[in-house]
Image (cartoon, rainbow, N blue to C red; front, side):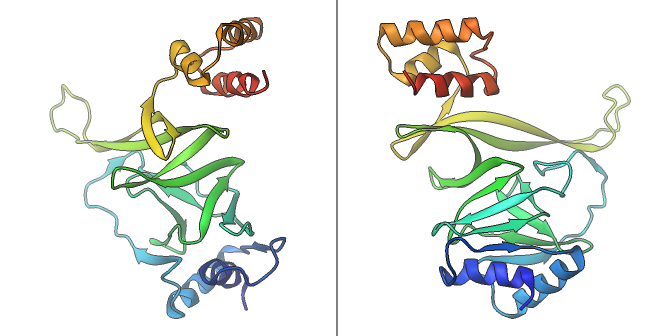
Length: 236
């Protein structure tokens, strides 16, 4: 059985092999052939393939998270099996992970039996909230809450008006932050008072956190710094 079919078949039917087993997607030609065979063998529970056609009107920008598709991805199942893929992107409009098959054909992954996607070392998870499924980057997590980063895209229509200087439509990607706690997801802004309230500490703990941030030149508005601050707060 070819490699990618082996990977996706395992993810579709559940834990057949040991948890330490690792699957690897091979070259693009092998990947294309196996995805086609997967569709013929009824792998719809894991995902599906579709062919896209280029729009007649030229559009700048992209509704994908990454500018390139050559991304190192580990797919981790709910029973802790791990599989490797090197061709993946996040469709922000649909909140689905997709892989190019060939030409304009795309394979769309579902989240059946999948716990998370780890792409270039960053964790992405799918959460259902307010009757909607969305994919989030997990910025920080502990036993009480998760700091998540969400993604959205907006299409700005072009105009023939020379004063506007925008002939083509253009996709604009945006990011926002949320807190997931008690199975609820709420908007969150990276601000000092919000973060100090989040850690739910007493006066001494808050003072220690503020001193740590000041001594290490950390900003409460910068994501990477906030991660360090939260990691420090969990230790005191």
